[in-house]
Image (cartoon, one colour):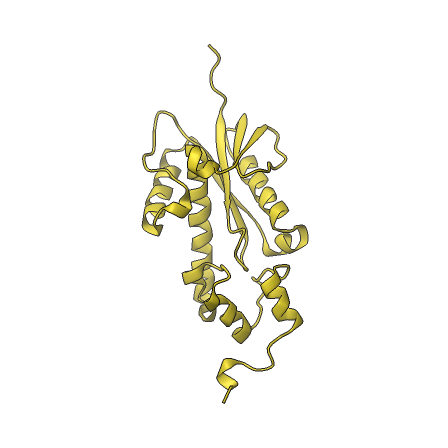
Length: 201
């Protein structure tokens, strides 16, 4: 009997936000150390995600987290930056995987076989684990950024284009951590408000 291929799950977090890097994770789970409760990170509470992230790091055969920067997102576009972050995460795994299961419909260029699985974060435990690591890692970065720029409310919305974030952008302007290629940010750069809410009578 041939042994199963050494397989990693790969997912990213942060394609939709207006700021910060896109973060990818790759995880090779250990069949001898199962982790219960793995699911798509978006369907888990923040506390549950954080607990599972600790367990994944402790029990996985290998895991890695990587990112593509705001500058890379603006230069490449968000899809290609996401694939770049995924490639970096897989390349950092030791042992190296023989097969990579990628969440979504596109695969990054890898040195091993790759298979795209739409909705994979809900179907494959290794992709679920990767989605949890990517999401928790990115959230930590947003909370850290919030400590320096509390006026943007990043700890609450994690950079997504909420009404509060868009209002803060108009009021406080675009920073280096914002993605200038994203339409709401670009619109403010091209047509900055002439006054802030505080200046209105």
